[in-house]
Structures are given as structure tokens and as C-alpha cells.
Image (cartoon, rainbow, N blue to C red):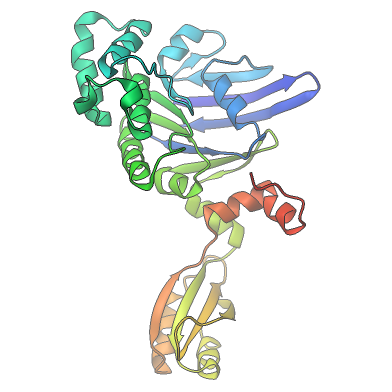
Length: 322
């Protein structure tokens, strides 16, 4: 469990992190998002004890990071954006070295390390030099060191950076499995992966928490009503007439059709209204086949841009997409 209360970090007159508070429960995978300069990395450095705070408290599994730093750090494993591995070591040598640093007794170590290697799927790489491993496997070795000691909290900073699509899928599945036993705080700029992996998403902007909820609730909150994209076979006039009879339908807008003889329409229901059945029956009565109906809620990328104001900056030509 992670509990953060009133966390603030100042550098002279500049406030990098401004009075943020949040909680991550046991077994929760929390996504932590923020653009460059938003305060994300500073927050992670305070959470892991690398930086002191100007104000506030950090509680890691019941231990205060600033009052009981040694005990608090025992409760967490950390994988920074660049895995902290020694390239000239064999995988087993490095993991034993990390176990020494964490003061794992010799009699516990062998079984623990074997289990960790099975979990992150590097058992076959045990006798290989780390410099000869792919980036994906180096990432796994870095994650293995974070798991040594079985800490209840795992913090990962950009664990998918530089990985190919197959490696991303493998790491994503691994993170999901870790969420069954650990509290996981995951920082990433690959927003589609955050949406796929995390139970909850927290967006930091200009040093403050700008939004925090499940991806689904964030999407619902920003569109203020459920929107769907429908593909309907028939003329525009016939489709308009049928849609005008659907109860609780707030609005509908036609988009360019991708299939000849069809109409593509964005339909929006009133808040808390489920219009799917009404839409189906109205179109069926008019003998207009419904070929496709899918959610058209905002993506996590769109929510992120709106929360941080980058969509406005980009549209005005003043944004920096980096």
C-alpha cells in the first residue's frame, strides 16, 4: 500500500510538485502519467527515497519514508527507466549481488532467486552475460532485482521504453501477474499500454494531480454521456427518421461513410442512459440493418491531452509534442 499526503518539492522559488495526495491499495496497478516537466519523475524519486520532500508524508506499507527510511525502502522494489544492471556480470552474478545489497540471507536466496527467474522468464539466461541480452531481457533482469525480497510495493518508471511490440506484450502480461500479489505503481508515456494494464490512472500536470480514476470513468466524465459509432445500411433520410424516434438520444452526427450504401453516425445518449436497445429496435422497425456499433468514448490519449491542455496548445501552434 502507498499513501501520499500533501507531498511538495521546491527548488528555490520553483515548485516541482505541489501538495499532491493519493493512495494505492494492495493489489492495485496504478498508472502514473505526466508530460516532461510535469513533476512525475520528481514524485517517483521522492516515493523511492532518492529525494527528500519539502513538505508532506509518504507511507509505504505502513512505514513513513522520511521517519523510517530503511524500513520503508524494504517494502518496495524499484525499476528505473534505465535498468540498474552491470553489463559485465552474468545474470546470476548480478542477482546475487542485488540480494547481498538487500541483505537476503544465504539460506533463503537460492529458492527465492529461482522463483523470481521463473516469474520474469529469465531462467534460461542465468549464465549469460548481461551485455549480450536484448533490451527486453535486460528489462526483465532489472525487474528481477526489484522483486528480490518479495516487496509488497513495486514501482516501475517507463518499463516499456524502447521495447518492440512483442516485448511490450510480454512485459504487459508480466505486470498484470505482479498485480495479483503486489501494489504496482507504473509510470509510462505509452498510454495505450497504461489503459490496458492499469486499474486506475493518475495524471499529473504542472506539479499537481489533474485527474485520477479508472480509464473508463475518466472517459465517461469527459464526454458527459455515452457515445457510440454506428454503421447503418440505408439512405441518410431513412436513418435520420429512425434515429429521431430513439428515446433518450441526445444527438447524432453523420460522418464520412467507409462502406458504400451505408451511413456512419456518432450517436450520443443522455447522461446515464443506455440507448442501445432503443437504437436496435428503431432501426429494425425501419428495416435498416445495423452493421456495426462500438463505443466512441475518448481514448486515454485524448483525455491526457485535454487534461494537460496540450490539445489547445497544439491547435494554436504553440505546443511541443515531445
